[in-house]
Image 1 (cartoon, rainbow, N blue to C red):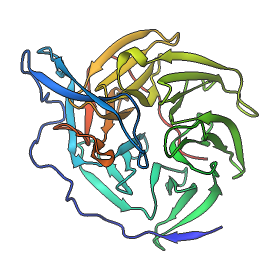
Image 2 (cartoon, one colour; image 1 turned 60 degrees about the horizontal axis):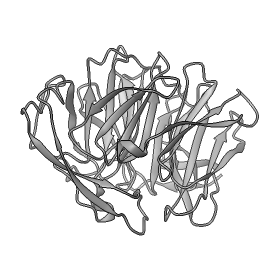
Image 3 (cartoon, helix red, strand yellow; image 1 turned 180 degrees about the horizontal axis):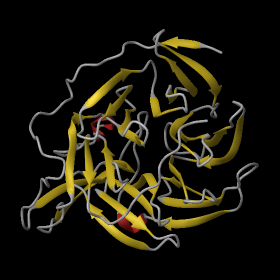
Image 4 (tube, rainbow, N blue to C red; image 1 turned 90 degrees about the horizontal axis):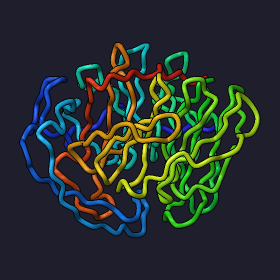
Length: 351
């Protein structure tokens, strides 16, 4: 096993915005008929993307568009992703992929853990002994907090020209990570599962930009998007062995943007962040759209349920300036949505 040293246990808050300060439940957009400009990519983005084509559209906001949405904390991330609510600590973990940071927030949005990572980090969670675990670089790492190092416990090899892009824990407590073509042109991404004994299984491949793995309430169905194709797939997901048949769950082409991070609520609905379109979309288990929540930034990146009753929806976002695309006023912020009448499922700790 290899160890690499963290570059530090804290980072500067130079990206922090002090422009707005709101109570957790206070909405920040109530202007009737206000217009906003969004950049909606016809392609998709990533840290190593070669090009991103963009078009600009105007949209009218209803007076009540953001009445249930508030800022969560004051941090502004470069590429905020992979939020996870830890029910044991009642805290929200999120990563800044390009910023190489892991941030943990208390329920009020105050960051009490700010950790620099030595490589690109796509997901973070805790194991059953409360150690921090990261999907970073080309593998799965566990933090040795006392030594200030990260120990590699599994290698997740991608094809040449590909990289890891997203990860989450399945209902059995196993890491599942998906890759992407760094240039987002070829289906090079591989889907891995890390078993309880540390062994690694390749369970699917052919993703150009794999995103948003999540599971039905009983764990029997895996949902995952290929953002370039603008499609969300469903796989039969047995507790062991290979994946079952893949089916098309939803095509998001007509909705704008691309399907990014996702989560499932207790009633089986799939909630998806449409990055570039500024929407969180709720699908029923049959793939029918039940609800669309407009967000204050076009660049939402992922969603997760959290809070004491698991009835709040936390949303990360990113700043597309990393690929040369203009952002908007609130890109990179974290948000919380309340009052939607849905509850989530407690996310398991790893292993």
